[in-house]
Length: 155
Image (cartoon, rainbow, N blue to C red; front, side):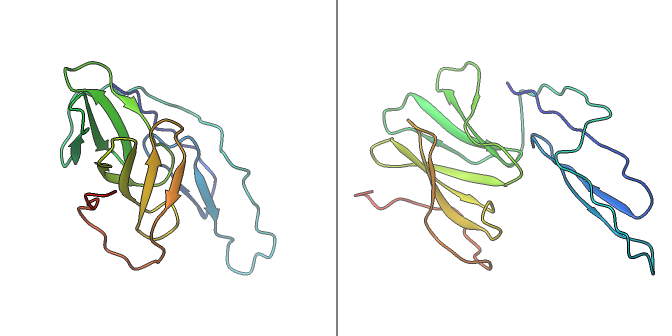
Protein backbone atom coordinates (compact mmCIF):
# COMPACT_ATOMS: atom_id res chain seq x y z
CA UNK A 1 0.00 0.00 0.00
CA UNK A 2 2.42 2.70 1.13
CA UNK A 3 6.01 2.71 2.28
CA UNK A 4 6.46 5.32 5.00
CA UNK A 5 9.95 6.26 6.13
CA UNK A 6 10.90 7.36 9.62
CA UNK A 7 14.22 9.20 9.92
CA UNK A 8 16.11 10.57 12.88
CA UNK A 9 19.28 12.58 13.41
CA UNK A 10 21.24 13.25 16.61
CA UNK A 11 21.66 17.02 16.96
CA UNK A 12 23.70 17.26 20.17
CA UNK A 13 23.18 18.61 23.66
CA UNK A 14 20.12 20.79 24.12
CA UNK A 15 18.72 19.93 20.69
CA UNK A 16 15.25 18.66 19.93
CA UNK A 17 14.30 16.67 16.81
CA UNK A 18 10.74 16.47 15.57
CA UNK A 19 9.96 13.80 12.97
CA UNK A 20 6.76 12.50 11.43
CA UNK A 21 5.95 9.33 9.54
CA UNK A 22 5.47 9.98 5.83
CA UNK A 23 6.97 13.47 6.12
CA UNK A 24 9.65 14.31 3.58
CA UNK A 25 11.39 16.87 5.79
CA UNK A 26 12.18 17.24 9.47
CA UNK A 27 11.91 20.38 11.57
CA UNK A 28 14.55 21.05 14.21
CA UNK A 29 14.95 23.52 17.03
CA UNK A 30 18.13 23.95 19.05
CA UNK A 31 18.08 25.37 22.54
CA UNK A 32 21.37 27.02 23.54
CA UNK A 33 22.86 26.36 26.96
CA UNK A 34 22.18 29.02 29.59
CA UNK A 35 24.29 32.10 28.86
CA UNK A 36 25.42 30.79 25.46
CA UNK A 37 24.88 33.52 22.87
CA UNK A 38 26.16 31.46 19.94
CA UNK A 39 23.15 29.28 19.16
CA UNK A 40 23.86 27.06 16.17
CA UNK A 41 21.28 26.38 13.50
CA UNK A 42 20.72 23.16 11.61
CA UNK A 43 19.87 23.34 7.93
CA UNK A 44 16.72 21.57 6.84
CA UNK A 45 15.99 18.94 5.79
CA UNK A 46 18.36 17.06 8.04
CA UNK A 47 20.21 14.08 6.60
CA UNK A 48 18.85 10.71 7.72
CA UNK A 49 21.18 8.57 9.82
CA UNK A 50 18.95 5.52 9.65
CA UNK A 51 15.64 4.58 8.11
CA UNK A 52 13.31 1.64 7.92
CA UNK A 53 10.50 0.57 5.63
CA UNK A 54 7.01 -0.18 6.88
CA UNK A 55 4.34 -1.74 4.67
CA UNK A 56 0.80 -1.76 5.99
CA UNK A 57 -2.51 -3.07 4.74
CA UNK A 58 -4.66 -1.93 7.65
CA UNK A 59 -5.22 1.06 9.89
CA UNK A 60 -7.54 2.33 12.58
CA UNK A 61 -9.55 5.55 13.00
CA UNK A 62 -9.78 5.95 9.23
CA UNK A 63 -12.33 8.30 7.66
CA UNK A 64 -13.46 7.41 4.15
CA UNK A 65 -15.88 8.44 1.43
CA UNK A 66 -17.01 6.77 -1.80
CA UNK A 67 -16.88 8.82 -5.01
CA UNK A 68 -20.26 9.78 -6.54
CA UNK A 69 -19.65 7.40 -9.48
CA UNK A 70 -19.02 4.55 -7.01
CA UNK A 71 -15.60 3.68 -8.46
CA UNK A 72 -13.13 5.12 -5.93
CA UNK A 73 -12.70 5.39 -2.17
CA UNK A 74 -10.89 8.35 -0.59
CA UNK A 75 -9.52 7.80 2.91
CA UNK A 76 -7.07 9.19 5.45
CA UNK A 77 -4.22 7.27 7.04
CA UNK A 78 -1.49 8.67 9.30
CA UNK A 79 -2.28 12.27 8.34
CA UNK A 80 -2.29 11.89 4.55
CA UNK A 81 -5.12 11.35 2.05
CA UNK A 82 -5.28 8.41 -0.36
CA UNK A 83 -7.52 7.03 -3.08
CA UNK A 84 -8.02 3.38 -3.98
CA UNK A 85 -10.27 1.66 -6.54
CA UNK A 86 -13.44 0.37 -4.88
CA UNK A 87 -12.68 -3.14 -6.13
CA UNK A 88 -9.27 -3.12 -4.44
CA UNK A 89 -5.74 -2.48 -5.59
CA UNK A 90 -2.90 -0.17 -4.70
CA UNK A 91 -3.70 3.00 -2.80
CA UNK A 92 -2.40 6.28 -4.23
CA UNK A 93 -1.29 8.97 -1.79
CA UNK A 94 -2.74 12.34 -2.86
CA UNK A 95 -1.48 14.54 0.01
CA UNK A 96 1.76 14.36 1.96
CA UNK A 97 4.00 16.41 4.19
CA UNK A 98 4.03 17.58 7.77
CA UNK A 99 0.37 18.65 7.76
CA UNK A 100 -2.27 16.33 9.23
CA UNK A 101 -4.93 15.88 6.52
CA UNK A 102 -8.10 13.96 7.43
CA UNK A 103 -11.81 13.35 6.85
CA UNK A 104 -11.97 13.51 3.03
CA UNK A 105 -15.41 14.02 1.43
CA UNK A 106 -16.07 13.95 -2.33
CA UNK A 107 -17.79 16.92 -3.97
CA UNK A 108 -21.19 16.10 -5.53
CA UNK A 109 -19.60 16.04 -9.02
CA UNK A 110 -16.60 13.99 -7.81
CA UNK A 111 -13.98 16.49 -9.02
CA UNK A 112 -12.80 17.65 -5.58
CA UNK A 113 -12.28 16.49 -2.03
CA UNK A 114 -13.15 18.58 1.01
CA UNK A 115 -10.94 17.76 4.00
CA UNK A 116 -9.74 19.01 7.38
CA UNK A 117 -6.06 20.00 7.65
CA UNK A 118 -3.68 21.86 9.93
CA UNK A 119 -1.41 22.85 7.00
CA UNK A 120 -2.08 26.57 7.66
CA UNK A 121 -1.11 26.29 11.33
CA UNK A 122 -4.66 25.93 12.63
CA UNK A 123 -7.24 23.29 11.79
CA UNK A 124 -9.21 24.48 8.75
CA UNK A 125 -11.23 23.20 5.80
CA UNK A 126 -9.46 22.74 2.47
CA UNK A 127 -10.36 21.47 -0.99
CA UNK A 128 -8.23 19.35 -3.30
CA UNK A 129 -8.77 19.35 -7.08
CA UNK A 130 -8.38 15.67 -7.95
CA UNK A 131 -7.34 16.30 -11.58
CA UNK A 132 -4.57 18.79 -10.78
CA UNK A 133 -3.73 18.17 -7.12
CA UNK A 134 -4.22 21.89 -6.36
CA UNK A 135 -5.40 22.74 -2.85
CA UNK A 136 -7.34 25.77 -1.61
CA UNK A 137 -8.01 26.90 1.95
CA UNK A 138 -11.74 27.43 2.60
CA UNK A 139 -11.77 28.59 6.23
CA UNK A 140 -9.23 30.66 8.14
CA UNK A 141 -8.51 30.60 11.83
CA UNK A 142 -6.42 29.00 14.53
CA UNK A 143 -9.04 27.73 16.97
CA UNK A 144 -11.41 25.89 14.65
CA UNK A 145 -12.60 22.46 15.67
CA UNK A 146 -13.83 21.21 12.31
CA UNK A 147 -15.11 17.65 12.24
CA UNK A 148 -17.09 15.68 9.67
CA UNK A 149 -17.17 18.26 6.85
CA UNK A 150 -20.00 18.01 4.31
CA UNK A 151 -20.75 19.53 0.91
CA UNK A 152 -24.02 21.26 0.14
CA UNK A 153 -25.93 19.43 -2.62
CA UNK A 154 -25.04 22.16 -5.14
CA UNK A 155 -21.33 21.91 -4.31
